[in-house]
Image (cartoon, rainbow, N blue to C red; front, side, top):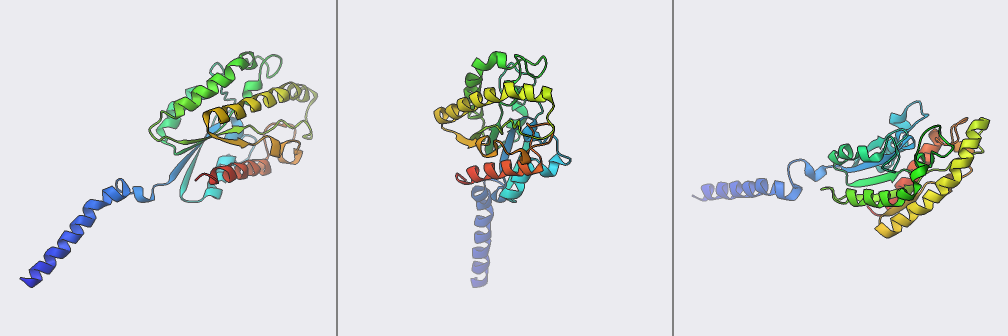
Amino acid sequence: MKVFSNYSFIFAALFIAFVSLPIIGNGWGKVSEKIKVACIGDSITFGARLDNPEEESYPARLQKLLGGKYLVENFGVSSCTLIRKGIPTVWTQLSKIKEANPNIVVISLGTNDTCGEGACGDRKCWEYKDEFEGDYNDLIDTLRTWPSQPKIWICAPSPMVLETPGLSEERVQGLSLRKPRLQELNQIIKKVAENKKVGFIDLNTPLAGKAELFTEQDGVHPNEYGYFAIAKLVYREIKKEI
């Protein structure tokens, strides 16, 4: 009877441990589930002008900085705007990003919203600049309805650097129009971050005038060193809160 009693005790202990597993881990495998980071943006988030964006884009670099406990996904779309009336716009991407169930969202948009009224050919974005702030507020409100309840950081996008070697006269003229517009939007982005109480990451000031960090003949898209600099800025800010 004593032997039977010992076996009964062991069986009961194992049963309790087994039943407790889903409670402790919120389901099988979730004890070690990675923290998901969604990087939302345009071609600068995607990693344009790089030979290997899968390894050298800022989200890819951010993944290496954060390490194996995190899963960083790149949702950058070339030419993407924040303004709803832009084409393409982040608003058409939200269902896909929501399905990723991110715990952290980093948004860097605004560069393409400076297009229009004499810049970027026939693109029309700056014509709707008065809608930028309201659309950004709405975007944050939308993200806050997601089941994952992500922590949100919004970025002042990286600068336009007219000192970059090899810029054509046409490129200089276009960027000269757009650069002050971007500064105007950056002030709005900072204001939105304060009002909505989300994180703010300045990617503009630290990279301003640093031609060595930008692709020659371009002046907007970073080179591999510039993308790494962006990743380090994002990493530094989000690590303060996680």
